[in-house]
Length: 364
Image 1 (tube, rainbow, N blue to C red):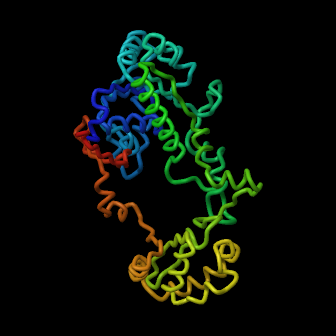
Image 2 (tube, rainbow, N blue to C red):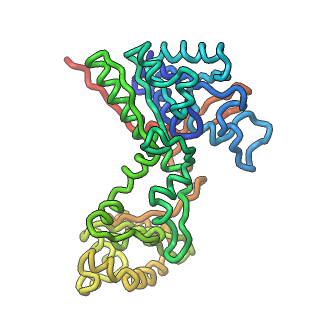
Image 3 (cartoon, helix red, strand yellow):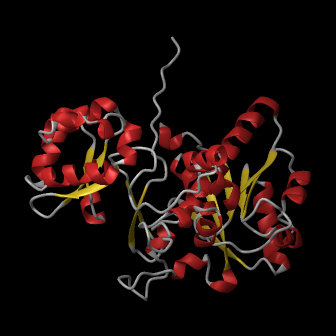
């Protein structure tokens, strides 16, 4: 039933790249009828051409484009032409939700801005995605720019090394989640009152909202987070990696005192908990290098598989470092793959954007 939850809901998508299309695909996965308007003059969404060298240059779509464009109907229009503008407005006024990442000035010029459409259809929910909080700032902003501007890159990377971009467009995905939440609230409001709404978020605000503990540490202490690789600034050993006897790497994420005691038992170093510099988490963070030397020597004595079994048995959080092939050998990863045949007959695959489950209990 979950995949039919929004059956009958009509969504029109004026968006490209990742964030906006991810919102559209979310509703498609839950049963909505989603129409994506693509620019006829440029061959469609720019990401159609963002192909990795391993992909066929002859394909009309890229794997990147496939990642957030499942389950949609695609309509190619030239919105500089009056007849195509008229068609776009007709489709927008017939929709329940419009998703747009047009610049406000461009949307207004084409007659598909929030004010124009909602004046004609007050029940419409217009979801606007922008780069920055100021609606007058129409500067283009790709994800990498926001990772830099919002502080993520400064914190990311190895100690002493250069800032590093995250390997997925995380800010786009965070913005997509913010916009989905806003649309869902607007749908709930419309169900109660009959009123539509204009909702929106920016990539910058979404990024800032996700700085979490790193932001609060600065705001409360003035500490500027520094690059630490995979290590955690507040917990040890957490995010620390070690080499096993077979050369494989293992990551520990020991977050509680009990888990640390169990770790000491596993590596046959029970006395560590009695040493002042390892007696509690704060002390372990301060003396992380000394602690990691001891753990590292111990973990070199067994293979990765041996340690994973030992740690699992004792409730010590640990992980192997998987590449993408290994990830999709996991049953839960395979279960999240969505397949679709493209118009040219090409078989495409991507991961679901919906990762929650719902179960309904009928009222007796």
